[in-house]
Amino acid sequence: MNDVAQDTKPKGLFDRSTKGRTLAPVSVQVERGRIRFFAKSLGETDPIHFDIDAARAAGYPDLVAPPSFFMAIEAMADEERSRLDQPSLLQVLHCDFRRLLHGDESYTYQGLVFAGDELRFDTKIVDFYEKKGGLMEFVQIESTVSHPDRGTLITANRTLLHRLG
Image (cartoon, rainbow, N blue to C red; front, side, top):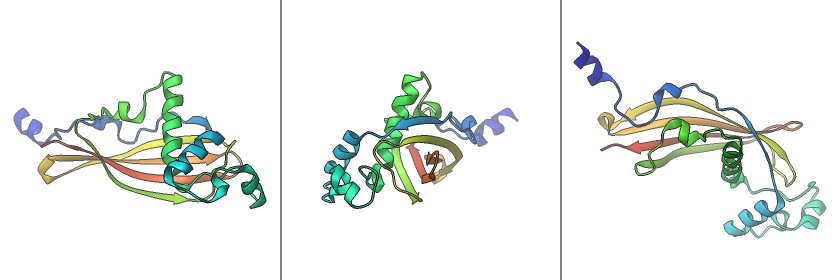
């Protein structure tokens, strides 16, 4: 009977006991230099992303981060977790980088991110599932970026996967 139970147990690499776990929130400070670098890397030409005077003339308090800046915020959150001696999301999940792939992603933007913002980054491990008879395992993740006065600015829903076969 134990053999049957073992056969039905998922054989993936992710730590599935983390389902429903919320990582400790971290705060990050958005720096002008990071926005400038990121915007230029993307080929942005709108000066609100790299010229403070242009951003202020357009009615913004400081440089405006491009929408895809979420990934830079997540990297900053990982840096902060490391500084605080906390594990990153990928460490908590037990990701194997030799087999890890990026799956689906969707972002909901409720507000803009500006240079100088002090933001809170929250992440929850939502669910795990398999496909192709267990040859692929998936984890669904939800993260939010929020500002103390302006509320939630970005909600990200993403899926990572391991190819097991």
